Amino acid sequence: MAAMIASDNEELVKRISKLAKQNQELEDQIRKLLKQNEKLSKEIEELKDSSGTVKAAADPEKQERSLRFNMATVLFADIHGFSKLVEGMDSTAIMDELDEILIEFDAIVARYKIEKIKTIGDTFMCAGGIPDKNITNPVDVVMAAMEMRNYLNNYETVKRGPGNKIWELKIGIHTGPVTASISGKKKISYDIKGDTVNTASRIEAVSEQGSILISVMTYELVKEFFDCEYFGKLPVKYKDDLQMFLVKGLKPEFSIDGKGVLPNDAFRIKFGLIQFTDIQEIILDKLERELPPFLFYHNVKHTVDVVTEVELIGWAEGCSDEEILILKTAGLFHDVGHTVAYDNHEYHGTVIAREMLPAYNYSSEQIDRICAIIMSTKLPPKPTNLLEEIICDSDLDYLGRSDFIPVSNTLFEELKAQNKMGSLNDWNKLQVKFISGHQYFTKTARSLREVNKQLQIERIQSLITG
Image (cartoon, rainbow, N blue to C red):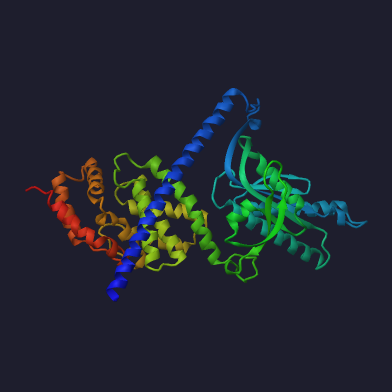
């Protein structure tokens, strides 16, 4: 019975491994298609520039160009209060209050890396995903909207006391493609247009006082984080009616006090797992641009393989969400140091990680753990804990794979190009010695690769002459 259960578990792990690989291949294809699409969009914009459809001004500060963003989240906030002003109130003081509120809104969107577009009277407009494209912009914008609402409520309570509000806020949010006109050289400003902008404005118009109303497009991208309530449909000309949802607050499991206002660590970790896609895009692009041409093994594919494998083994070994995030981040950065130097690349990778990760809200403790995991991949591997064992097994996963010999040959070519290795025969002898002394650390890796690894030794030995 125990043998049957062990066999079933091993088969399950193998199926998960296969699905993970297939998923990664699909992600690679999507990434390539998105890059091709961006390249075509850029070429189209350049063609427009040359045909004169983009305005050119004599003053460089006023020169404009256009860019298309495939996924931006647009927010319109109406800070309404004038209809409630009672006779005798100082209009100058009221305008000063509005300015104070708008200045704080500017600070809020800046904290969430959202671009303020403009203020029109008492209407505030901003957009996430501009100018830096990111996958998290719908969540960022809804979080900013909640903070705006909380700030205004607290502002009124402190200023006038409960029940004496003169300012009301209603917000409309929609996610979709936009075209951004970029002007200025020293001080760059953005204006955006398109159906997404118009729809966000219309959603704000039908929103109720004190409400954050989002489109179904935004809802689908944020519903894991927020408690939302169906609001109704917005008629859209020539299209199906658009469903809308009210954002009530963070889900209790993602809120510090369970009241849906302030995010907790569970929120930050789940958000980090989504945000990882943006970091991965940056690092993989860096590797494609900056890796030396002789790195036939330590290339982009190897990094993607390690990131995929640490997640697979991590889940199988019972790691938490935070540990999976730390593992994937370490896997992503473990070879980025090759862009600096071949030798001691692990250390150089930790330097790059320490420079980059604080901007993505990784704590100093998380960064220290990530750097320790990266350093554990230095040969010979000597892991001191489970996470280090997982990345060491993932880094040398190819030893037990069916494609071992062609992958091994790429490492040989890489070393030979740097005069670090002699003949292929010498390399095969070294490989036999290394594999014979190697042992996978985790139970998952042993069940997946250990048997195949023994076959590799026999295959290599058959290639050795003399």
